[in-house]
Length: 453
Image 1 (cartoon, rainbow, N blue to C red):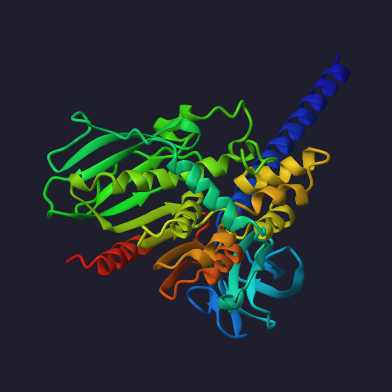
Image 2 (image 1 turned 180 degrees about the vertical axis):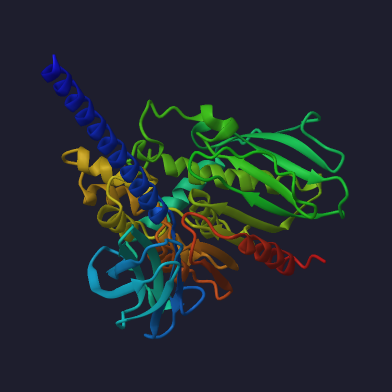
C-alpha cells in the first residue's frame, strides 16, 4: 500500500511539472508572437519623382529621385534596383543601390540614368527590403519632338477615301430631330437625332442646346470611345453639343451585328467591308447633320471635334477628311501609329485585352492571317496616315503610363500633324487618361480660339 501511494504521488508531481512547463512554453510563445506581430506592423512609403515635372527630358540629364520612408519598428535593409527598357521592350540598362533603413527611418536615393536616344522609355524600380517587395513602373520621354514614325500609306489611299466619301453622298441622310422634354431642363434643351449613314443603316445621337444663348452657338462635336455609350451633354453653357453614337455604340448599338466577332475585327480581311470604313463615314454623316441644321442656332463656321481613345483617333481622321472641322481636341488617341502600337503591345503587353491586343491575339490564333495581312487592311485606317492632312489647330492630351495608346505612338502621331498650331499636354502619372487640369486648359483653349468671353 505504501509503495502504491508513493508511485501515485510521484505521478501527480510529474504531471504538475509537465503542466507548468507546458503553460510556461505557451505563454512564452504567445509573448514572442505578440512581439513579432508588433515588429511587423508598419508600411513602406515611396515617392518617385523625375527631375523634370512632366518626365519629358529635352537633354540627357535624366534623373529620378526616390524617397523611402519606413514606419516599421524594425530595420529595413535591402536594395533598390531599376530596369530600363525602350518602348519596344529592349533592355537598355540596369543598376542597383544598397539601402539600410533604421526603425521608423527613411532614406533618399538619386538615380542618374545613361543618355538615351529620342523616344519613350519604361523604367521599373524594384524594391527588395526585409519586409517589403514591390515594383513600380514609370515612363519618361527623351526629345519626343524628334520621334518621326514612317508612314505606311497605300498608293491609292487618297483615292480610296474620295470614293468612300462620294458613295456616302449618294445615301439620303433622312435626318430627324425630336425634342426630348423628359430629358430637357430649364437650362438645356435635349434632342434625339437620327440619320442614315454608310450601308443605309440608321445611326443616332444627342444634340443639346442651351436655352440662354446668342443667336449662333459654336459647336462641340463629340465622337465615341471604343463601344462607349454617348449620352446627352448637360454641362455646356456656351456650346451646342452633338454626342454621336456610331454604329455599335449606345442608342445606335443595333445598327450593326458583328455576329459575336470582336468589334474592331469585324471584316478585318477586307478593306472595303471593314467596320471602320463605316464608322469613319458615320462621323462624316454627323458633320453633315450639323451643317444641315444651322436653323437651330448652330454656328457651322465654328465646329470643334473631340474624342478620347477611339474617339481621339476618330477626331483626327474626321479633321483630315473634312475641312469643315475648325478645331480638334483629342485625348489618348487609340490606334495612333498602328505599326508601332502593334509591335509595342506584342512585346510589352502580351495577352492584354485591349483593342490593339485583340488584333495581336487574332493574328496569333488564326493561321494564315499574318501581320502583313492585317496591315494590308489597316494601312487604310491608321490615324498616322491621316495626320499630314490635318490643317486646323489641334490640342492633344496623353498619359505616359498608357498601355492602350503608348506615348511613343501618340507623340509620333502628334509630330506628323501638318498644322503649325498644335499643343500636347503630358500627364506623367496617368495611364489611359489625362488629369483634370488638362480639361480646364482645354476649355480655355476652345474659348480663346472661338473668341468666347
